[in-house]
Image (cartoon, rainbow, N blue to C red):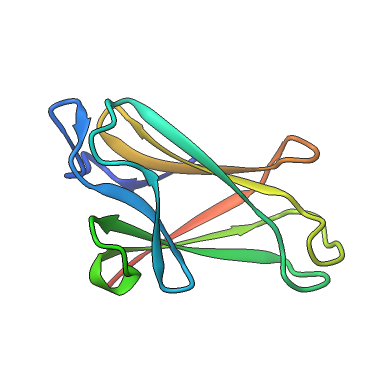
Length: 124
């Protein structure tokens, strides 16, 4: 598990104040929605687009706009350590959570239930 933001400003007063999500081809896809009571978590499953791909990069955003570029870029999650396979075979479940006021992330290889490595690269 990696801490993305300690005492995230997205979670104030026990409720999310902004969406936290991912950049999906230029569109903000919220995973943790504004107004959700904390603690909370959401999981999304990714796969690979290329044969023998060794990592998946996921841009994380915070904000309320539909277009990804209009939101604050928190940074990227680099997920690796899953088995090399043909494209589309790995099923990597990435979870974003608000725990004790911190925004955290962790990932597993969903088919086998094994933990995979998550590296946080903050923006800036």
